[in-house]
Image (cartoon, rainbow, N blue to C red):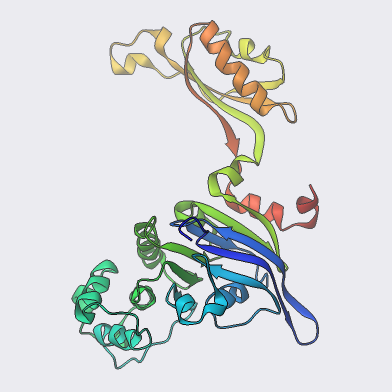
Amino acid sequence: MSMAPSISLDRLTKTYPGGVAALADLSLDVPRGSVFGFLGPNGAGKTTTIKIVAGLSRPTSGSVAVSGISSEAGIAYRREIGYLAEAPCFYDWMTARETLRYAACFQPWVDEPLERRVDELLDLVGLVDARDRRSGEFSAGMRQRLGVAQALIGRPSVLLLDEPASALDPIGRREILGLMDGLRGTTTTFYSTHILDDVERVADHVAILDHGRLVAVAPTADLLARFTRGTLHVAIIGGNADLPSLLGRVPGVVEVVAAGPPSDPSARGSEPPALATRSMTVRTADGATGRVQRAITRLAAAEDLILVENRPVTLDLETVFLHLVNDRGRVA
């Protein structure tokens, strides 16, 4: 069980009356301790998936397991789950401390001293100073942080967050992302969102859903690395003015464009011109980026050049997302 994925979805299907398919054969494994971004356009099935994993909805077919425990296992399964809805509601007259005590009433497996657990969570989410204020006085960001605290009251192994930062201002978003990042490695955070910049900032894994079907799933960095612009950013110390021509003779190179004049070492007072850094953009033939990258590394070693940078220029997550949810892009 210790080696099981944190969340395992096997051919999950959800069909509503009238034949509307919200999910179709969704299979997905979420690594333990990850911050996992679950993406998709409106109506893709993100909230449906999260509600099924949270036990708030039943699939038409397929199975769900968390930490190796089937969703059919009752309380043993529920204790593994912490859940925060997109628009959490609290009793406005309750204080933050009272809200967490109330949430604990529904999780009888919390057997540690309750007041200590409440104080731990209020400290974790940065609400210690507001612990005796009524939640009705809280800002949207504070309410979201309180929502995360109530989801964590039972020490779940998995935290499910549905659009946790969608309604927040930049400060509130930063607070929630920082909180999610701080949970990395101790609790698996599985969250849906449409704010792609946030995913790039905090998610180490990502899955993209479109019309109820899984389009892509991978570590975030690996997914972005699959989509290069067919170019390399190269920075080299040493060489002469003919350096772009030298790189242009590498098989597979289509064009070399200097990103700017060599850095001016005289401004630093002591470096000779030979140590100026030259930055270039190297455009490659289709499918040749990796081969050209390796060839440039060998060339730099052979010519006694210092290779500072030699990396593919990748697309951002928004561009990759739009490519993948487009039918032609998916076929490609």
